[in-house]
Amino acid sequence: MRRSTLLTQVLAVNALLVGVTALIAAVVARDRLTDVVTHDALLVLGLTVMSAVLLNSLLLRSRLAPMERLVKAMTAVDLAQPGMRAAEPRHAARELKELTDVFNRMLTRLEDERREAGRAVLRAQELERSRIAQDLHDEVNQALTAILLRLSATIQHAPWDLRSELQETQKLVSQAMGELLTLARQLRPTALDDHGLIAALASQVSDFGQRTGTRARFHYTGGIPQLSDEEQLVIFRVTQESLSNIAKHAEAHGVEVELSFVGRTVLRVRDDGGGFDERPSHRVNGRVRGRPGGLGLSGMRERALLVGGSLEIFTAPGVGTTIELTMGVT
Image 1 (cartoon, rainbow, N blue to C red):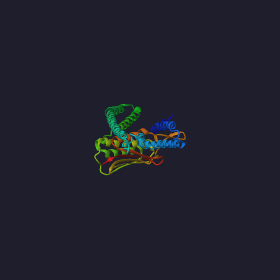
Image 2: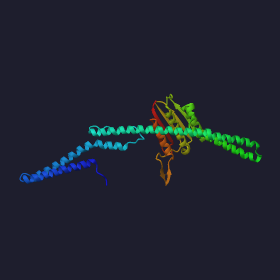
Image 3: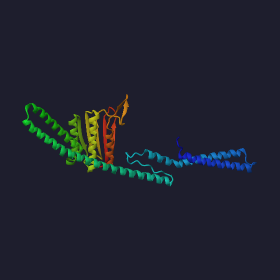
Image 4: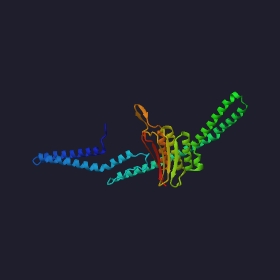
């Protein structure tokens, strides 16, 4: 059963009290002043009671309206969109103003704690990626190199009927080494540390084009500001995840990556692929449609929030997709 609102409850109690008081007054007056009290007087008394109840209703509604607005603001708050606050009520009771202020301070504290926790997770994640990449490069790559050397030595002394098979194995090991180095670079972007953000993005886009056969172009505008390590890493990872999604799902022929430092730092990754429905999935003729990778998109949004930025997705089926990362004023 639906519970009644606070306004309804208070109004019902007040109406009951006024009605009971009026009824008692009418009974007492009729017993003591029988000749004076008439039906007209009782009618006037009833109208007076109704007027009091109506006036009471209007006053209660106006006084409780700020509380209703505060409840709606609380319901609409989304921590994934920082900065949302409840408006300070005007002409409201002191307690309601204090409640609004406490709620807004709580939101600020939650956003700060969420951001700090996210940064700690991001740092831990990058450290783990770096450790795995280092292990792949130092341990596994060295083991594969040793295998190549042994194969080369074996081929020289192997019978002719085995040399072709050993050479094919040698090619497979070399291919595995190349894929391993590519994976290590994806786990930890050494180009970002060695050559800077612009060179790392240019290399990333170029490698993507060569690997997928897609026309890929990177350019930037404006003077490069002093970006923190976290901001540079977020830009790099968002570009990486966007290109990965394009390769897996977009069926695009062309990709453009633009980094603008005019007024704000804005990264745009555009593709001319099929686009997708932003909902995680939707059904068409009983089959699930839409681009998978919702976790990738939410991960990019989380990274943007950690550096005080925002991430928007502009897409629709058949019109391509634009990923836009915006960070503060430069």
